[in-house]
Length: 521
Image 1 (cartoon, rainbow, N blue to C red):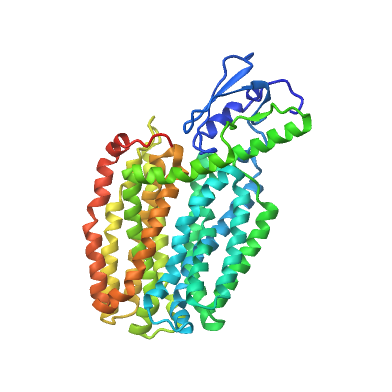
Image 2 (tube, rainbow, N blue to C red):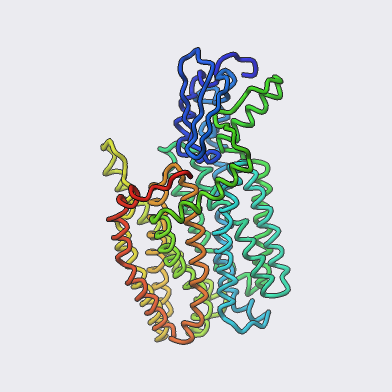
């Protein structure tokens, strides 16, 4: 390759590269290449986000050597794909487990620091969610500049450091601050996880792999409060952070050894740099290269989610809606400790087991989503046109209705001290509805913005998690003033008021997409 006189675009498989990356936000740009003829000495690169027009000698343009180029992540061996996907899934599971693993320990933390405000116990748990919302604003654009693997390594390192800081905290304020920073660095899989899997697998394989990838964090969310409760009972709450740091260090070390870069623009730029070094010819360029500096690329990618969030009613409204849905889920998560202790006199270990109800509900919600997706794609299999984004929203009217029902069941059975299994059943109903709604709307947003899916998801995640962080703080004073039954009734009433939203967005989505087109992003 280093001495070839042919254009890299004349190599077999070059069209495969260009078509397979249309959905990537490669350095913030969508690449269009026009070759005038086989003898053409020039090529024009046009980008969506910039007025960039460059001319390079096509014989020095670096692409995949052939359709089965081993550098192309889609062509990695099956064991290597499984290894990379497995490591990314383990990191994702740990980052998600860090949300709920601390929930049963909230009362112990408040007791150690002699804090009287019960809302601070909720904040210790939910501040991590705020970090998960802020992190992608940095991680996503950074991965477009330096690649996915360096961002994974940096994030895991930061996650280890700040969990150690949490374990060594000497005040509640310090603990909350470092808990937020651990959330920022734990957010890497929010942006990079699904993107890495999409890099590795073809569209026909991607659906199954992403479903299995989503299953891991759901299971982690189920068992993490159980683990946290038993650790708190046996070793103390600080050991929760030591465990997170140790496990993250192990996964990070394995990642530094085995993870391979999957981001096509970075891979091809490294290939071009190697050719320039080997040949001394500075004219070798990646097909993704333009005249935008790394600094400008980062800034464009950083600003893009905010543009989409501000100028797209779809992203803004769904983010607020999902923030309320997730906020209710986290409010319930942070209320178990006090409610099951005060109403049923559970120990910390027994309280941790009560989270299994919500976990089973999440599994059921994931199962419903998988069945729905299979049915929808099956009905479209023989049609020329694909699914409209709005099709993803079918069914959420019914699953969203589970949330107020679950809230009433949870609140009033706990208020009246009926059998402990009934409020746990209520938490399962809430979780089933909330997870199904979350998955449907998340995929809907991605389908609405295929060229800028990562930025759309990042903007949505930022606002969604910001809202979801605040809602649990209202739980302790609300339940203290109204009681568990009437407090959950108020939440159920608010949920009922929002019942028309899924129907409204489904009916008017196409109009909103055509009327509010976000330009110059």
